[in-house]
Image 1: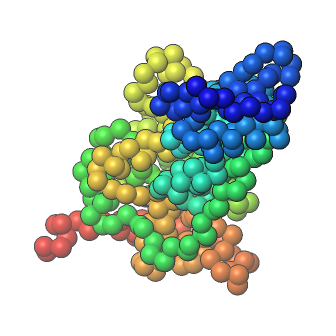
Image 2 (image 1 turned 180 degrees about the vertical axis):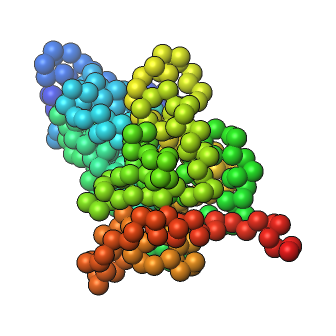
Length: 356
């Protein structure tokens, strides 16, 4: 084999008879021992690796650590430093980065991460969250001296495109949901459509905030008005809510009816938002539907507008501050009128009605 001689402490490139013939080695400045930086197909690539090390020497024992291993170290480090919600966000973002799992961390380039994000069928907002995760993870890699530069910061995000056509649930889809209402999670999706509640609002809804006698759900979140709103329980879903109210073993309306771990049944906690979202998508996919959770609010909003509910009723039910700027100050509707307007909404057409 032929050796490419270099000055002392400048490392060496040795040509071997292996499939990747160019072997790069350097002297570890801490131990004085010779260490390998890997085998490469071309001398040019081998030289690049050697030059990168000489410019920014790194911990050689970490030079072959892969993406998933750095992530595991990162999560252990973050557990006591960030909130549970932030930790869950990191975990969800990591799941989107599966193509990177087994790649050597220090060799991952920006175009590879860009390709992963480009291939994801998710919103621009979620892509932004994923980029933030990668940037944070690569910052951690710099702290460990595995890398010298954070390539994740070069990831480019697409421009947010305003969706012209609202992807609301069709008449056919709502009827199909009712036909499958006995399936786990379908009743929860129907509640979202009929109340316009967000996932966080629904999973956090306590039974003490449900007035079955008068037929109202009290409260929500996000806006100040939303926190104090009163949502009339539509006559179509009254029985669903009443049944859940009586059967829920927790203080919350929603609960997992099929816990794998029995001890979970005794935990008086709301369902996790991400857990709910996961089952939302799985259930609709099983029924051949493609919707996001926010499409439930869009559906209710669209139906109320089409069926000419007053703008005041719409803002009261959805908990919006206003539909337009001029509606910022208004008189709140009477509860009974609000309930009557809600019950006038037809979410789907009964086949018997169309044939009469």
